[in-house]
Length: 107
Image (tube, rainbow, N blue to C red; front, side, top):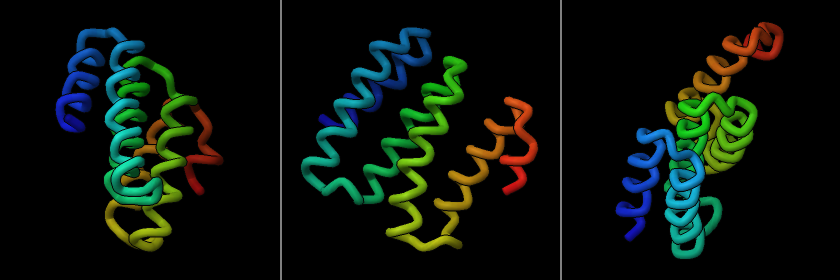
């Protein structure tokens, strides 16, 4: 069910229906958090999916918020130098560059 909700969320995102996309991605996230715990890496991946949906819709501030949630879990679970954490930092940096926030993107 989790995968189906996630796929539906991605589909609605591709169809430029952000409310439905968020609804289904959030359902997937909620189920994962309930069954696996709120600090599980799969929950972090769901936050990344939601962040990517917001990027596709131009919602950069919301994307940063969800990448931030994913980053917290990733750092606690994998450590600062793990590729997952590096990927989240990279995604956040790209958003900040798009927004012209070069000072924050450099950190």
